[in-house]
Structures are given as C-alpha cells and as structure tokens.
Image 1 (cartoon, one colour):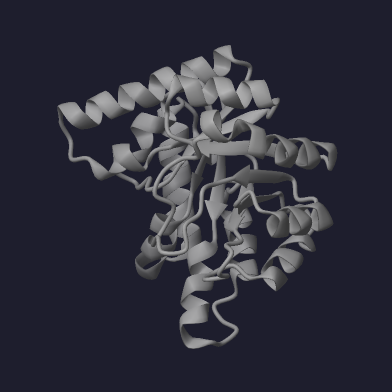
Image 2 (cartoon, rainbow, N blue to C red; image 1 turned 90 degrees about the vertical axis):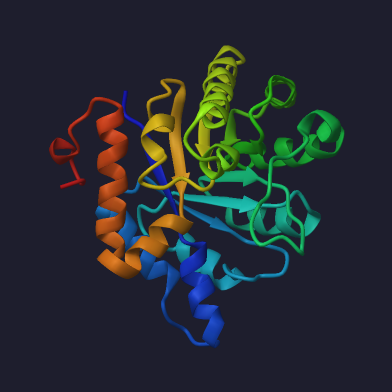
Length: 252
C-alpha cells in the first residue's frame, strides 16, 4: 500500500528568520517539495513564531493544489487562526516555550476534556484532525473516544537510540501502537527525527499510512538540494513498501 509523505518546511523558515530577511522562502520550499514527490506540506505555527509566521500560513494556503497540515498547540489563538484558514489537516501538538523542538506527545488521556472542543470545532470546519502522541494504548483509545480521525506517533525516541535491543524494543512499540490505532479506527501517521538511516523500518509498518519529515530533509538539502533529499527519502519509503518510486506519477 502506498504511504504518504508530508514534508515539514519549518526549518527553511528558521534559516530565513536567523538573518531577518525574506529568504529562503518556505513557500518556495513547499512548491519544490511537491514537485519532488511530497503529498502534503507540514508547518508548525508556534506561539513564539520562531520559524513559521502567520503570513507564511496565508501564502501556503494560496498555493494551488497544496494540502497543508498545520501543526499547532491547542490554544484559543491557534484555534482562531486554523478556523480562519481551514487547512486540509491540523495536528494538535504539545508546545513549551523553552524547548528546542517538540519533545514528546500530548497526554490526551489526561487532557481529553480540554482537547475535546478543539477537535470538535476543527472537524466541523472540515479539517482532518490528528493528535501527536507517544506510542501508548491509553493515548490511542483517548483519541478514538474524542472522535478524531487520525493520530501521529512520535518516532523521536526510536530515532535517538543507537542500533540494538533498546531501539528494536521501541520499534516494536511503534508497530504495536500502529496496529492498535488501526483497531481503534484511527488513520495512523508517524514522524519526528526520521532520517535516511531510520525511515525504512518505520515505513515498513503496514498500519502507518503517512510519515511527516522535515528537519533532516532541510539539513540534507545543504549538501544535495531539497528536491534530491526528498526524492531519496521518498524512494526509501517506497522501497520499504515494495513500490517502485520511479513508476509513480509525479515522482520521477
């Protein structure tokens, strides 16, 4: 079965913002990503606007054929922005001002009552809603109870471990969580920290239908270009699923 690739462009904006100029443009990066085989574009509009900014979201929404997956914290400000734009998808993520990047998943089981109105309003606006969690059964069951259609499993722990029993154990956790997500009726996505070295094992998990990858692709683009880094990732994903990337329309 085909597996979708969402390309996160946050760190193109990080590089732009480091100099306070208008380049490199994350919207141009999004267009190149689509040409290279991405199925959707991921952008995290953080409270502190450290990378993606409000005008980036507006410009991304204006690109014909672009399916935007907007990552956001569950706050009134972000809900208002999302409802104003109505992107293809919204992924609710935890957010701490002091973190360098998202450090783990939401505790949906504990925060279910608080998250429920966000899920309901975003679904009513026509957005595909997912929640970013650690691979745990209780979290998956809480998401299913909320009525969200999708979940994104945090792969960062797996990616940070060296090859060996601990990493193998974390991969099994991801596999079991993906299977349980499917049993709960959830569309299962995964992402965070995936590289060319770690992606294939995760891509082979049958129940995972979408991978969202960004930081590595932007970093690798320094050496080989953004299109090439995405094509390499896309090819490994397709190989892991038993597909031939070169035969797929729009991925040559």
